[in-house]
Length: 427
Image 1 (cartoon, one colour):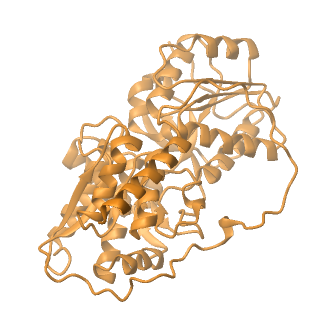
Image 2 (image 1 turned 180 degrees about the horizontal axis):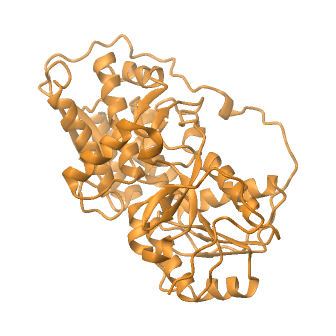
């Protein structure tokens, strides 16, 4: 790649990185006020327009002088990584199974790894290396919204397909880049289901919200507040905290004073678990609703008994999605000694979808992108993956809860006047 062009790519990415923000969020903001209800007609609605690539590249023949098929992986490559270890295990599991089945025309698949704890710093260079120097056929990974934004900026210029297994930030797809696909349902879909459940639980219409200031929590909270606004429900209290903060005294004092009928807790898996321990430790038994991170093993392990009874968007549950899903969970647990959560299942689906696309399209990058789009609906272990116009998986989201330390669906029955999901009293 031309040195000046490489410099231009890196400079533009650094500029975008500054705009998107730090993974750990900024300073605590003031409580959110009700959103404006005025409806405007957009000049261009990207949500209803399918992003297609109409440029050159489909005529380029697949390389014939290779000994392996390289796939980029942007994320931690350590099975013991707290945040994304399960994702790496699931990605390798899919690769190993594909190679045992013959690979691509008897050529093995291999993951080429790239990651940085500061993605918008050195991570930019590494993703650029994957795209231009390593010759990967596509990229899978990005454990959160900010890292998905980063990869999106690279693949848009490199004309390289990218599948994000778990990032649910819809703004990455609304950039109208035809190279990005997101397997997890978007925040707007999850938040709508969660808001409806909170309204049905909160007979007195008094709710409180607690949220982290990290990127993904702020984006999900914005969608949740918008869903509340449509239901004419506004939190009487909204307090925030920084990731990995030392304590939650201020937030707990506010909740104790407000005495809400329900609490929305939107934070990362570990922070949400820490907050639940603090909340129940104070004797507060308010019903708690949260984001998808509550469906992760990390949340359950951190919260302990305090996780019991929380309600959240259920992104994956093997007993709901069928025998193939149950079999995947069994094999994963057998290989890695731990039951997988939704981050592993969606990563397994993302990798298998890409491998299927490569086997159908060959090693032409543009044709691989086309095949990813055409494979919808893809029969994954998480259920059918159906691409919407922006490349996000459009499927309904149901609710889950924690019972005896395990994720389980919330029974699909109307909530009685007293909330059906009262948190248990802890001894």
